[in-house]
Length: 172
Image 1 (cartoon, rainbow, N blue to C red):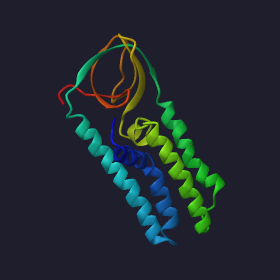
Image 2 (cartoon, one colour):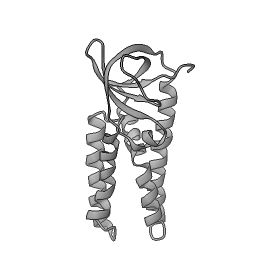
Image 3 (cartoon, one colour):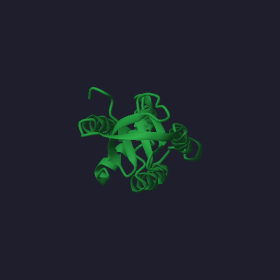
């Protein structure tokens, strides 16, 4: 399982698009806050890319896929949380900023403790697809792959976390 720090940084990467939005909204009146928010999102995004690059260097093992279901819609449901701050909290003062911060801290704790590193819209933007697979031995895993997978296919994977796998493309 990835370390807590890694899971926190992957959580921040999932909100990189939102950090860009807040940067644009806040920059004219709150330069330091806007830059800090963008730095957090950018740091998380860079960490995610480094994490995926390092994960690809791990020794893979093979699994035969007995069944699979696409789970890309989970990332779309996650994006709904982007909408909540805009509907519920106008950002006019420090009280709203604290309330929004509490919301993101609670959301972050749930994300990190639930090991939801695979539910990340940035992974989708970088071309990863999310599958729930069942293997020949009836193991159930989440699989991140950059291509469409097929029934009864054997794939080379590396383990990212509890029941979370990353397909290792041929030649890497």
